[in-house]
Amino acid sequence: LADTVLQGIAARLEHKDWYVQQAAIEALQGPADLPDQVLEGIAARLEDEDRDVRQAAIKTLKGRADLPEKVLEGIAARFEHKDRDVREAAIKTLQGRADLPEKMLEGMAARLEDKDGYVRQAAIKTLQGRADLPEKMLEGMAARFEHKDRYVRQAAIKTLQGRADLPEKMLEGIAARFEHKDRDVRQAAIKALQGRADLPEKMLEGMAARLEDEDEDVRQAAIEALQGRADLPEKVLEGMAARLEHKDWHVQQAAMEALQGRADLPEKMLEGMAARLEDKDEDVRWAAIKALRGRADLPDQVLEGIAARLEDEDWVVRQRAIKTLQGRADLPEKVLESIAARLEHKDWHVRQAAIETLISQAALPLDDLSLYAKPLYKALLQKSFEQHLYWYDSGNSFIGV
Image (cartoon, rainbow, N blue to C red; front, side):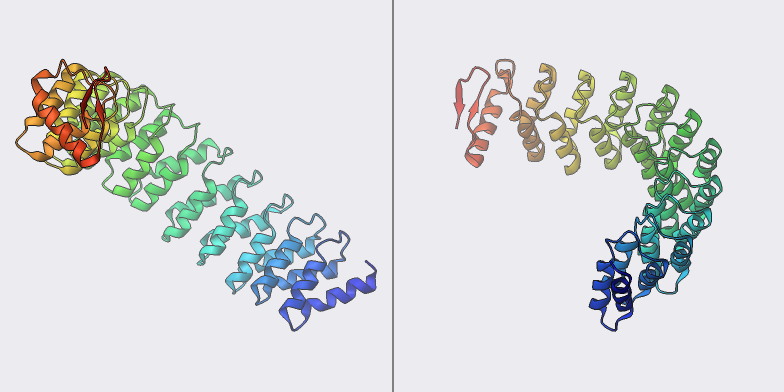
């Protein structure tokens, strides 16, 4: 474009109509050789009152490799603008740039404390994953775990989560906050280290200790941080299992949830979970069934313990027991007999739970359950009338419809 044409377009950056300004900015998106004065004019539109104009300015400036230092400094100066929209626009314009000096990065990091959520989010997105953040700045982010504003704490967590370049000293500093007097700080520290593969055993033990935290949110953060980790050493697992017998049911429940789904649990730990099936607190019984559900390695004794919960006084526990036993192809004969015996229970809830469990079996050993043939057939016929269910035994002999 000839200089006169560029000047004519640039002059319209300050037009009274927003759509003319937007059109002028978009027309300048293509040329690679814009003079500094024009780039400064586009940057000035980051302060425009119209959102579409600001977005056009962001799009035009973002990623341009030829932005001179003066223009970059002018954009960064807007990090502290009184208008939240301008602050957000300035941060978004510099997202993804590899050539930002430390001072500008510090200015972005300061926006993690911004009172506006959109500005904080823009700062998080800009800083996340940057490999050039100096250690001093990372320490400053970690220090924000103790900020009085929970939104600032969350912003610091999101910025540090998953970073592979955190030095060991900083990891230790974060882990030290597991025992902070403020519940929010403890929770923030655990969440910041969640998912990291390089945590030493001592830190994992510190996380496991938070399963005993007095605060529910901290316990939940510890559960989520420990669940599914393949690198938990035996000592940590034993410590979690020991909490299955804690006097506080909240701690018992947290331990079970943290152990849920692990394929490497020895039989002794499974038996420890199963022992909680008879806990006086229904939440603990519910958590125990949930933790055992779907496991292919359950011994007969544990399965019998789950079957006993078909008589539980709590409806939720009974339903969990049904769903845990339903469809299991490995239910031993003794367990099936135990379930069938409940078809004659005085409580109709228990009878219903038993039949719901039995009808899900792919093949019932009817000869072995002959003692319960009358209540079983009665229940099946009743169910068939209710649901138009066709029922066959393992030999495809017709029974009821």
